[in-house]
Amino acid sequence: MPNTSSQTSTQPCVGIIGMGDMGRMYARRLSDTGYTIYACDREERFTELLEEYKNAPLINILKNGHYVSRLSDYIIYSVEAENIDKIVATYGPSTKLGAIVGGQTSCKAPEIAAFEAHLPADVEIVSCHSLHGPNVDTRGQPLVLIQHRASDKSLALVKSILSCFNSQFVYLTAAQHDKITADTQAATHAAFMSMGVAWHANNQFPWEVPRYVGGIENVKINISLRIYSNKWHVYAGLAIMNPAAHNQILQYAKSVTELFTLMIEHKEDDFRKRINSARDYVFGGLPESHELLLSDDLLDKFSLSNVPAEARTPNSHLSLLAMVDCWWKLGIVPYDHMICSTPLFRIWLGVTEYLFQTPTLLEECINVALENDTFRADDLEFTMAARSWSEIITFNNFDLYQKRFEMTQRYFSPRFADATKLGNEMIKTIFEKTKQQKNTV
Image (cartoon, rainbow, N blue to C red; front, side, top):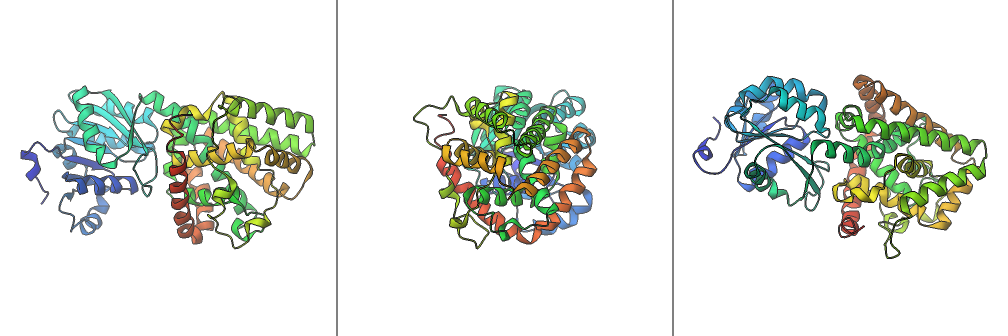
C-alpha cells in the first residue's frame, strides 16, 4: 500500500511520472530529504520497480500516472519530449485539485503546449530542467525554473522542494529556455556525436590511435563516449523538437562543410580570414584579465590511451574551428549563457577557447588543415557525419536518429565504464575551475 501518512501534514507529496535515469535520481534525492514520493513508469515495469524500491519506504511505486496524479501535490513529468503530449493527455485530467505540475524535458515548447491542452484549469504549472545528466553532482549546477501559470507562492513551494539539490536556480520563460538550450547544447551534441560516427566509419577506437593523444583529444573522446553511453532520446528530443536547435545544427554542418572545402582547395587566404573573423567575434570582447577556462595540460591526465601526451600529433581540429565559425554565423556569444550552461558545454567552450586564444596552437591547426593530410580521412568522415545528423534532424526522423545513434553506441560500448569515470572526474575538475568565472565573464 502507498504511504499516505504525509498527506495529513503540511509536507507536500511529490509525484514523478517516468522513472528513467533522471526520474529515479529525483525520486532518490527528494525521498532522502523526507518527501513522500509517488512514482510510476510504463505499466509493464510496475512489478520490477516495486521490487527495486521495496526497501525505500518513502518511494511508493504505483501502477500508472492516474494514481500518481490523484495523490500528489507537485507532479513532475520526467518523460521523453516526443511522448509528452500523449502522456499528459492520458494522465493530466486526473491531476489533484489545485496541484502544481511541471516537466523535466529538455524542450519546453511541446511540454507547455501539452500542459495547456490537457491539464485542468485549476492546476498550476511550474516546470523545471536540471541542466546536467543523472550522474553529475547537482551542487552548483543550473536548475531552470519556469513559472508559466502559477502564483509566487507555488513557485516558492517548488523552489523549496527542489532546494535539496543545492543547485543554482535560473528563472526563465519556456521560450527563453529553448533558445538558450539550443544555443548551448544543440551544436555541442552534434559535434560530439559526429566524432563518434566518424571514428566508427573509419573503424577506429581513437584511444588506440597514436595521433589521438593530448588534452583536447581526451575531451573529444571522453565526452563523445559519455554521450553515446546515454539513451538516444535524451539528445533527440532537444535536437528535433526544439525549433531553435534546428538552426544551430544546420549551421554547424554548414560551417564544417565550408571549412573543409576551403581546406582541400588550399584556399589559405579565405580560410585564414574566416577563422580570424570568427575568433574576433566570439573571443574579441573578453577582458584582458580573463583567465582561460581550460588548458591542454590540465586535461592530459584524463586519457583512455596508453600513449604518452608528449607524442601528440598536430591536428586540424576541424570540429573546434567549425564550432566558433558556427557561433559567429549565428551571432552567438557563448559566454552570455554561462549562467545556464551544461557541464558538456563548459568543457566544449573551454577547449575551444584554449585553441583560439593560444596563437601558436591556432596557427598550427591552420597549417595542418591546409597542408597536412594526416587527419584528412578523419575530417572527411566527420564532415559527412555532421551533414548526416543535420539531415536526420531536418526531416524530424526519430527512427533514423535512434538507429544511427544506437549503431555507434554498440560499437563503443565496451569502453563506456572507463569513459564515464574519467568524464565525471573531468567534469568535476572543470566545474571547480569555472564555477567562479561563469558569473563574471
